[in-house]
Length: 267
Ligand code: SF4
Image (cartoon, rainbow, N blue to C red; front, top):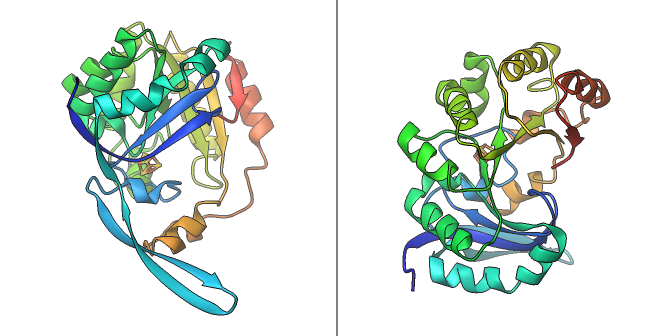
């Protein structure tokens, strides 16, 4: 029995936007980035945390203490994963590790990928790419598919909107090309932040130099996460983002299609 432990905050069964086919997505706690538009603010802190969930019944406000995150071991998670194997096989799906940032819990992520591989289950690693080179190379090579986020090419803007430099992220992506793992690039289209002509052109130029990208996914912004920030009483910068979705999505799609790589809107 594999007893390697990790902290997760959710398991989503029958997911259809986290890679091909019907998938089970395991959400791990902890992320080194602090993106303004983060849809999973409860994922960022690596530890189990207490939060207060507020709700209203008629005109009365209530607040309830909850815990975000739980300790599990690989064997526990594999038991849940096995329930959906028939759906994976029938749809070309599998398991996606997401978060948070799965590379933030390298031992757990590594063991979970290994356990899935041993049972012939397809795996995807949804990553921001921000990890030490050795950790990244070891783990990225163990997944069948990398869902690799590219946000901003200008390093100053990257630091401003995510809290970290993009240097490691870009360098790890170049290294990943040599691993032979299938790579889908995911670009969140945040109005007036990542969807600008300058940023899209820079991403295009960067990707045109790389051979071995199998798909580009453009992820339109939505503000559904605002309620989570309120619910968990977390400080938010998402309110400062324009709500109107990018008006130039089709144009961006056509720009990337020139690279002869399939481009999808949505994950
Ligand atoms: S990398 Fe993903 S999980 Fe981490 S802060 Fe950014 S959006 Fe949130």
